[in-house]
Length: 139
Image (cartoon, rainbow, N blue to C red; front, side, top):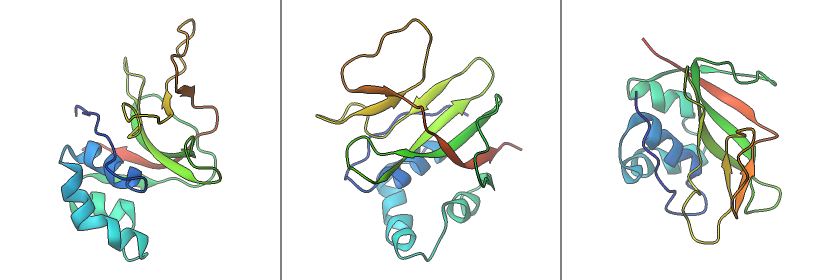
């Protein structure tokens, strides 16, 4: 599974954009099929993923990130005070990547992995407080 980074088209479509990255489909498709139902509490993220062929394990509490998996994570939003933001964390063997839907957007802060010895660029932040919500299961 290769993850291709996508940018969220609006300020409240980070979850939809992360799903699009996980399913390797255009974010517009996910927004059309998922976004409104999600915000109306009519569907959960794991349900949509499974409906589209990707199994996910629901994580509760502070599970941490284990090597060998891809996670959908909730992190403190860097651009709106008091909100959460969704990112994809790829912690598979020989891969350590964060796919933040805000990366590359003008005037937006975004998360990157904490690589020792590599300095941060402007608008980059390390993920100090991460709450994995779903672990993606590969069959």
